[in-house]
Structures are given as C-alpha cells and as structure tokens.
Image (cartoon, rainbow, N blue to C red; front, top):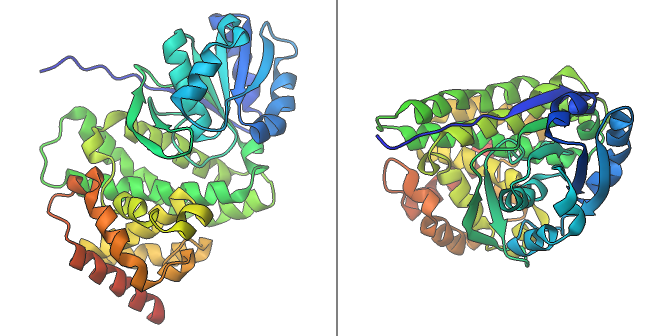
Length: 360
C-alpha cells in the first residue's frame, strides 16, 4: 500500500460566524491580508472588521485577487509586499478566489482561511484548485495543496445577502456529486477513502430536495434561516468533504461531460452558470442509466426551484446538439462511467427528457 494521508477542514457556520475568527486564527499570528473579489469584499468587509475590532489580529489590507484563478494572478499576489508580510491570508469571495489563494498560500507556505461570500461551490473546503488561463479558459493543470484551508467561516448573513442565483446554481452542481460518484463507483472494489466519500455523497442531494426551495426563497429575501444554513453546508461542506476523500476518477461522469459539451455553444457559455447546466446533465444521466425512479423523484424539485429540465431552459435547440455530444464524448470525465457512453444513446436520453417535459 502507498502512503496515504487525509486532512479534513474545520468550519464555523451561522449569521455571526466571523465572531469565531479570533479564537481560531490568533494562534497563527497577528496580521492578515484579505485577498478577495471586489464585490465580495465590499459586501463582507464591515462584518469582518467588526468581528476583529477587539482581537489581536490586524488586517493589513484588502487586495483584489485579479478576477481569475490563474497562475499569473497568483504570482502577482505572491510578489505583493503586503501579502508577503502577513502571517495569514483570508480568502473572501467565491470559488475562483479561494482557488487562486490556495496557489498563493502553497507557494508562500502561509495558512489560508476561507470566508466564502456565496454558496456556489465546494472550493472553500476542498484541497484541489481548478486553475484557468488569464482569458478564462480552464487549464488541464490543477493546483493540489497538501491540505484544504485551515478553517472555513460560513457567514450565512453574508451569503443570504448575495445574489440568490449563486445559491441556486450551487444546488445544481451539488446535486451531481451524489449521482455521478455512485455511477462511477459501480462495480469497483473501493478502499476506505473512496467508499467513505461515495457513501457521504447521498447528503449531496437529500437535503437539497428537503430544504432547497425554502432556502432559495429566504436567500431572495436576504434572510438567514435554518434551511439556508443546511443548503450552505450541503453546497460548501458536504461536497468538499466528498471531493477530498474520493479519487478523481470517481468525481464526475456524464453530467459534467455534458456541461463541457454545452460550453461549445456561445449562448450557454455567455448566459448560463456551471451548476445550472450540470443539473440538467444529472437528469440526462439518470435517463441514460435507466434510473427513471430517480428522475420522477427529482423532477418536481427541479420545477419548484426552476432548475433546467429541457433544452429551451438554457437556450439550446435540438439541432445544435451535434458538436455538444462530440465534445462531451471527448473529455476524460466520460471515461469514468462503468460502461462506454455512446453518442446515439445520449441523444435518445435527451429526447426522452424533452418528451417527459411535455407530459409532466
């Protein structure tokens, strides 16, 4: 057996979560630099400074991360004297922000603390960073840290005050985690970490069905609630835990492959979010795999929160699917299925879903 090590993140959640920052972070030093998104820092800056006013921690500066999780932006931050001076880094923003900061902290050997301002991705809890070219095109190269961020402070008031579309799309992406991992794991003899991650993945969809509609309503009203908290934990923590435990070959399958396929269409790339399109791919995957009982279970939830259930929901016409299917079949995620995924059958599954929409 090869050497195996697993580091798990810790977190604080609630509408006053930042009040826990002094207790958690003071052992790491007395100075911090906040690296974040512009809108994120504008939204959460006052909450953070208020929480730190009687602590030993001084914020040296608030620095924009550059707008893209790129090595180029990371290198610019690494060269910033304030970043070099700080004892610790607070990452304030969304997934790309924290992924860029993972690279920075890895290179500078500084502790990273995540302060997510939206609940759209598991990046604040996972150790892997998805990196991009400066123009926004995803790289094949990932940045792996030895550990995830030291601690995640999930301020549900900040997230409730953010645009609800990010929570909505986050639910769509989270939904895929369970159905893709279980499909990828079928027929495999899983060791402890993979088996634990796959088993935990069930919590990536059941809370969504139970609490998702109410959480989204509360987010639209900018109101923290129990239901919103459960969805924040589902989108951020549960998915991140699953990602940390499982091998890459168990992490995504047909649903994400279809997402990559749909990105060849300009209207999808420009107007629609990752989780939104992935959630549609989950329904197609269930049909492809013959899990029609799960389709019937999830369809009412999709309709209740307005996740896409048909091509028209994200501006796609059936006669545009040729290059979409070609691209989907070319990405490595599709190889994670326990069988060969074929284009004609994918088209049949999409057609089935189109017809299903007409009668339900």
